[in-house]
Length: 123
Image 1 (tube, rainbow, N blue to C red):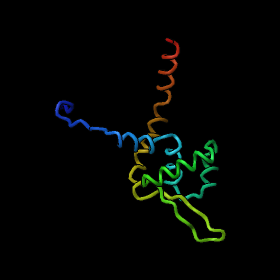
Image 2 (tube, rainbow, N blue to C red):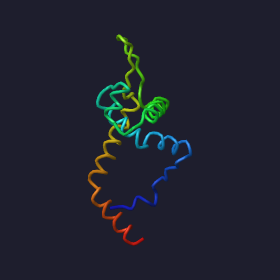
Image 3 (cartoon, helix red, strand yellow):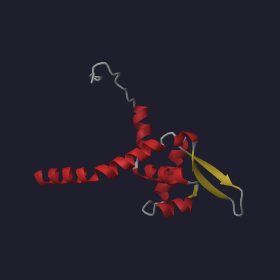
Image 4 (cartoon, rainbow, N blue to C red):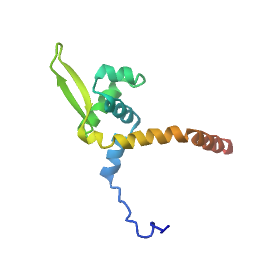
């Protein structure tokens, strides 16, 4: 198998890329994206789906995700008027990556726990 590391182009991660990744991959954003990928949800439905998130944190997370184009805030014409949060077209493009991260964490948790225990015992 040829060594691809010699000629591989190094990806340059600029400050704006790190900022975007920090905003999209933080703990609440991942959970919100996972939920709205399944179906559009109202704010209180999201709070019930993620019971440990505070109202303030959920509001900030939704605004950040909307600002970055990951979710759409849609006013539903009903009585009373409601707001739903839906995965955007751009947000759909990272759904497989988020699923892969969740799958990786589930598959590797035992190894991580062993590494943590080994590290902690050496301290």
